[in-house]
Image 1 (tube, rainbow, N blue to C red):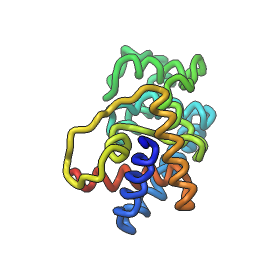
Image 2: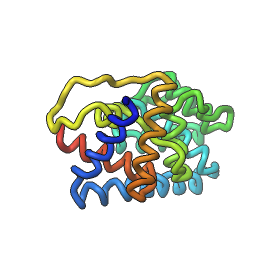
Image 3: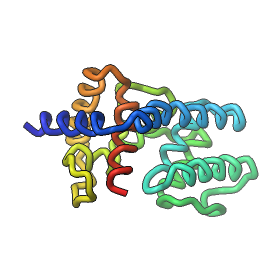
Amino acid sequence: MVEKKIRKNVRGWWDESTACEKEQGRVWYKEAQDFARELSVKYNVSREVAAGVISALSPNNKWERNKYDTIQVFEAIKAGLGPDDIKVCTYSSNKRKAFSIAMGDAKILRQSPKTYAFARNVGELDDNFVTIDKWHLRACQTMSKKSKRCRESVTPKQYRVIQEQTIKVARQIGVPAYVLQATVWVTIRNRWS
């Protein structure tokens, strides 16, 4: 029953999206991957490392600031600086994780499903993972066009269910799951703003 509601709401938000919102959703991860590719060339790291740093710095961070913070981490490492020498707009533990990833000492792990999925989507345009943030969670719970109180966190098991159901809808529609997620994100955020 829960799975059916998730599919119905995700599909509903897709159907609600305008042509412009669908286009924004279609290009969002491609542009993010281009950014990761630029970082990998400029700082001589793999795209996986670049995407991992982007992902580690993403929680509660706006995209433009996320990109800025990612560059700051790579520039700090290049200058021989450490995590305590710069400020970023996410949690300190995530900043330390970003430094570890950038230096090749760590990776984003599957045990962190959101940041892992985000790194897979940004780095590889991997259609087998869905970045489920608070906006996607809201979309899974309601079709309300106005801001509404919703649950904004899930267990790893619940994450897997939402990811599986989102992928099912994406395959029915005929778009990559990351495009569906990005489109839903843009659409619900536009309606609720």
